Length: 213
Image (cartoon, rainbow, N blue to C red; front, side, top):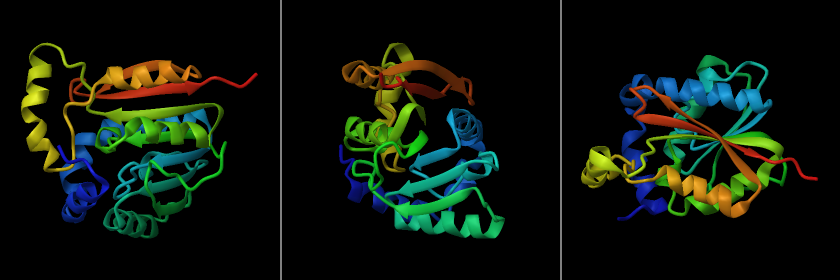
């Protein structure tokens, strides 16, 4: 299944004008939870996959948020929103590939990925980049549709995978893949998997990087 940056960019070019209307209510609990947990880890936050900026209103005013997205069309919508609403806590919005972050090591207290990790062609590579720009003791916060592939829900996820791919999502991504990444690295602890609306269909994961000795 094609999950290339070109495919994602093409999908979101079409979705950008209506994305807010479709997803604002559906993803609000996940967005709010993501922003709250990221802010608790520290004020300097990188949001990977900022999209049209749906998470931006949920960050506390003391935060300093940098948002990136692969889609120029999404970033344009986010910039319009920041200017219109006067979000002083948003410091920068940039077009950037999550697998090649143009930031120095140890730049952020938290890196959050709201509903984007399943869309990245090489998510482990992107998570490695998130870890690189994260300060020791910082957290990676991931919100997504994350299943375990078991039972009826697992069969449904596999069945609808081609359909949701057309709107830029993936239903086949497994929670275990994130846990395996953390175990392989050896410097992250999976602190929490928190179910969110609707009825735990979406989940928010907290990964904490261990302080260096």
